[in-house]
Length: 325
Image 1 (cartoon, rainbow, N blue to C red):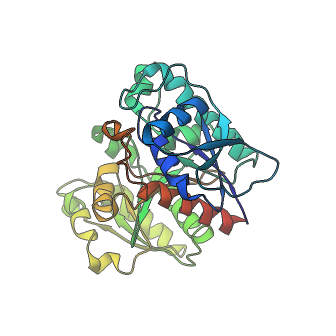
Image 2: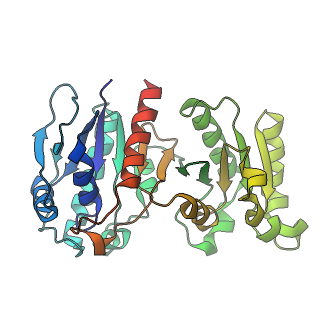
């Protein structure tokens, strides 16, 4: 079955447009629809020295020929110069996401793949924005989502996402953590066909709190919740010290890890699979995947950006969409 997949290239001055243009040079069995400025894509293709044919979205999705891309226009306010992010274009980046969300909710698109964005540029333009994950949740009326990155042999989900470290401990509440674990469990069963997920749960503090000597969140919040969910049939191991959890002893028989905060779990995953990993938002009313890297402004327009992660994101989105149909 040919799927219709929306792609937002992200920061127009970054490598998002490059990756999309490079990726379609061999065609695609699914229809990739760029929600972007058509002239920006044509200009970038010319800079890369690559052919690009843009076609309108028709009634039924059809595969892409080599060098072909479907387009839902989303004009920029200013010409995109590779490597030079311009806050004048921040609103167009947000508008592309809004169009994608609408299209996914009304089933125009079977899934969404997002390219890398520059959050600082968006905020400098006066638009409050903490990240794709939070924005997609808020604008699809989803109360709680879970950010998970996956690569060969490792999935890492996050109990909290883009928070200053000073705010993480207060955000680890029983309710918040329980919701995250229930979403992670349900999505691994429903979308990844794992009948009884085995989940490793990090402690928040060094040595998982050292019996309360290095922090009490494990005693007051994490352990009691894990015991409650185990009684319901969840297969949970933890809370484990993060410095020893990411070893073969634990990972070899685990389906996913729940880390308490962004930089507790993602450095390990990116060390293992950077450029071959995919970011998946669990809990949304549609499928969303993304690349595992940033805008790489210094590589924009050079043709040197690797398409590894965007290929993983497209393939993962298609697999999840097909399993949901």
